[in-house]
Image 1 (tube, helix red, strand yellow):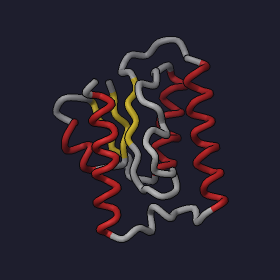
Image 2 (tube, rainbow, N blue to C red):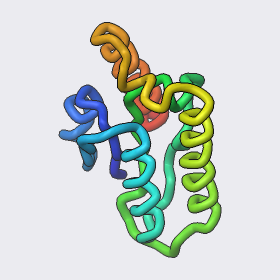
Image 3 (cartoon, rainbow, N blue to C red):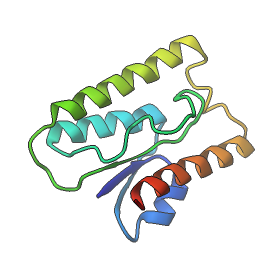
Length: 124
């Protein structure tokens, strides 16, 4: 498994057990990296929009994909492309970088939420 994330807490917790790619960027940058890897043949293991936090509200996202490269899965391509469109839709309705503008305390909370979401998903 590979975890694509922009959350340092996820990297710190899981990088000894799994391959973790730490993105120096936004939630959307994570989605784009995952999209690029799906086009190479990696399979989605967690949904790109899991959780109830709107994409434009949190600065963090972690997504698990299969480490093995196989045939390109058109279902996964549809999921990631629709996730990017959903992100863009929320960005147009609200401030595009609301999550990036969060206070330090809020960012700590959002990082913990993301860590909990990915942790619960991959520990199953």
